[in-house]
Amino acid sequence: MYRIHNKCRICSGEEMDEVLDLGLMPLANDFCDAHQEHSGYAPLKLLWCPRCTLAQLSVVVNPNILYYNYPYVTSKSQTMLEHFSVLTGDLMVECGKKSVVEIGSNDGTLLEYFAKLGFDKVVGIEPADNLRTLAKKRGIESYRGFFTEATALDVVDEIGFTDLVIARHVFCHIDNWHAAIHALGVLCGKDTVIAIEVPYFPDTIAKVEWDQVYHEHLSYMTIPAMQAALEGSMLHLSKVTHYPIHGGAIVMLLKRNDCGIQPGSLESPKVTLADLHKFAESQALQVKYLRSTVLSHVAEGKRVVGYGASAKSTQWIQACGFTRKQIKWVCDNTQQKQYKLMPGSDIPVVDEGALTRELPDYAICFAWNFAEEIMTKEKIFKAKGGKWIIPHGEIKIV
Ligand code: TYD
Ligand code: ZN
Image 1 (cartoon, protein in one colour):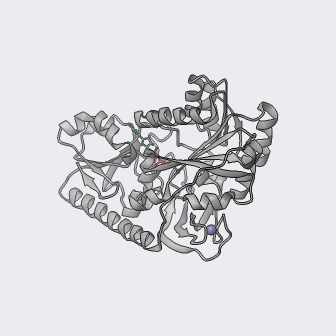
Image 2 (image 1 turned 135 degrees about the vertical axis):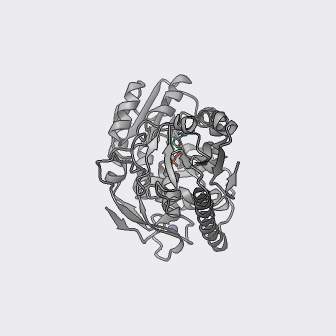
Image 3 (image 1 turned 30 degrees about the vertical axis):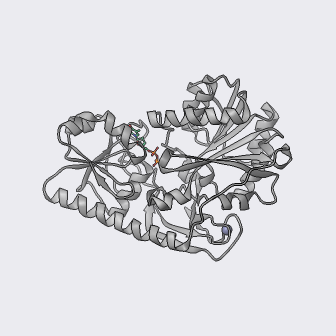
């Protein structure tokens, strides 16, 4: 199911420091029907390579198991659409608006956005059959498969070089970066702009977003790590822009070395070992706090539920050891997750309407990255006395 990873995937350094050990964890998106067996558990440990400053997991779970029938569909939330609007606007300044290839195009939501903006060629690359089918329904064609040199060659053969290549939250899932960077080079014409969006590790640790650490996220990005990864390749990092989405993300623009434009200087905060230790200590405190808060509410006869069956919710539920005794259900607006069981805990996932139908006393907002929007939407719950628990940074009860 998994193999041990003990050599840095960028610089091959073998001396990596352990940052966080979450023990055995289920696969965060392994939602199952009642009659299905879960894929199982794998160790989840975060390591830090002091040489190139890439944080990375100590195991690599077989991607065929992780992504075969992937339930994560790109959010259609207002927060996400606003991000797409800002992001596409920013990217159009960089590369015009004609053609785009998206790596990990999911159900085609972002590509549909580009099509509406007037791009005349929008093409996806996506390994999950169920997601490619959804994209096709939107009129978006996607190549089948993981992102490899062979897939890149197929795309270039068929449609030539594009103005833009975009990969949102994909690079953190890739095991062999050198192969992926090589494949990016294949896809990249002299004037192509490559945009890679990833969670930004300095944000992850500063805001203690430890629930971003799960088996799909093999790497945790810093700017020096990306620069080290590109060394010796035909690409360089030309610009980095910070966005607030998902608790803090960066979009890194890559260009070919022969593009004729000199990159500007890029600044980035230095992550120290002390920062990493503080992150691990704060993580343990957060888990302890949420666990004791929920246990004491349940002991008083209060009903506690979860809102948003995010991958993050699996991490919290597992780390806190919650079962149905503490959390009755987790609601989610994703059809692919509804009426299934949470990985590990077997807590049922229900539809969003459950919140107003059942009016529990507390709802833990596991989709904290959309908390404002969700709380605005779920006014009745609040008006009837329901309280939100937001497990992000210092855990808040609203
Ligand atoms: P998300 O934060 O996108 O991802 P991850 O799985 O990487 O942690 O997950 C948010 C989940 O919350 C997703 O399953 C959709 C769900 N959700 C709702 O149920 N209602 C909402 O209004 C929003 C914004 C999200
Ligand atoms: Zn390294």
